[in-house]
Length: 149
Image 1 (cartoon, rainbow, N blue to C red):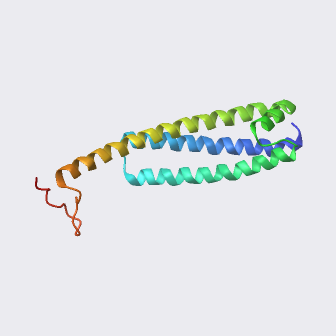
Image 2 (cartoon, rainbow, N blue to C red):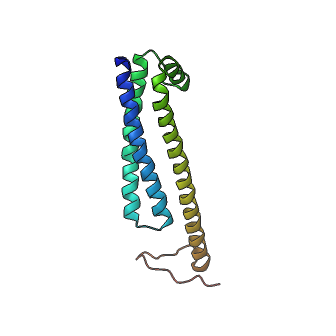
Image 3 (cartoon, helix red, strand yellow):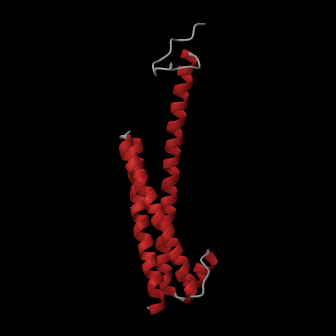
């Protein structure tokens, strides 16, 4: 391994490690969404996911700098060129991209679950409104009297 590649390989390893934690947080989130866990658990998971996203953004900047230092662009064509010039980069990039695809898929699935829950809640609110009228709650936060036909 070339000494010039060491910082890039280290960055790729760090990105993969953070993505593995991110994937685990997404899996935990899916479990909690489906098991109707507490809001606190979901809030904690969201905070962890946000922290991982910030770490990944920082590592993305670092990876861009490392690739630039080697004379490659940070886009897919630049990464492919770097892997062609330095075959030892191929496996770490493949692993990183596989984790990124997994994270993207899990995030999309969790988004679909959340969308279904929101739609269900909206239907419940709409049903209540049809029974109670537009003002479900009064100024004191209590249920209003049902609308009279």
